[in-house]
Length: 294
Image 1: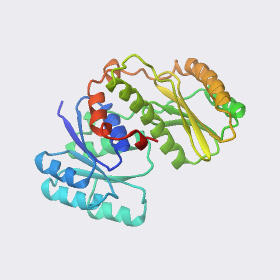
Image 2 (image 1 turned 120 degrees about the vertical axis):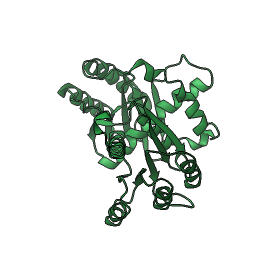
Image 3 (image 1 turned 135 degrees about the vertical axis):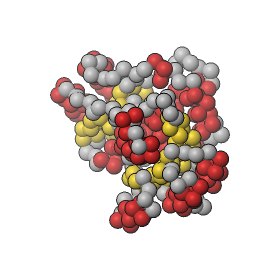
Image 4 (image 1 turned 180 degrees about the vertical axis):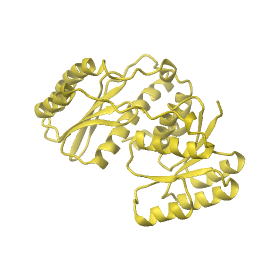
């Protein structure tokens, strides 16, 4: 099986971390390299051929379009996909004019970025049959929806979100919009992954982190690991009592674990024990201070 070489370029290290490990889940044939700025990315492109480059559009010094044009001069066959919050006609025209592999709007879900990756790789290799299909959508039982509604009612939360471990918003109950839901889902999943790997770097390989809590000026977020494959996020106002939120969320998590056990995909053992995860985390976040984390 031929290797698929992918380069991800973004000045946000948490985005790099999330996309990198999401792509690695597609299969062992995917080799992912990251760069936090366009200059470093261009140096890598000159040294190695990549099948696909996924780059942020707005970066200091050089835009994603500038990088795409420079990359095409070095490697005309390389597909380039832009990540941008500017989903405009001008951006679409740019993609068409430069014949790029496409673009994905920010915020995005993990399944959306993986779909772009697979489509671009298929175009590059002209062997779409070798590309792994995207994970099938989960068909949740009505009981799951009702349990989320009960949790929101008991906690008075603005909204309650069920998230897959890969960062995909599965079901939401309450007052929110798609952009907010997608971004929150991605970062709740990334936060759990980051904390677990941080503990591993510190020599703690036995602890299981079941929850996280963020306190803000207007909203608080409590997240709970249901079963290692699904996460539960509760967004509530500052008037909410954390103890009450914790109690009902934990109670709902136990009930959801039983419901989801019959439909949730099992995580392969090799994925849970990926030896590169800790080193990748160290490379990206090792020099960051705690204040950088949300």
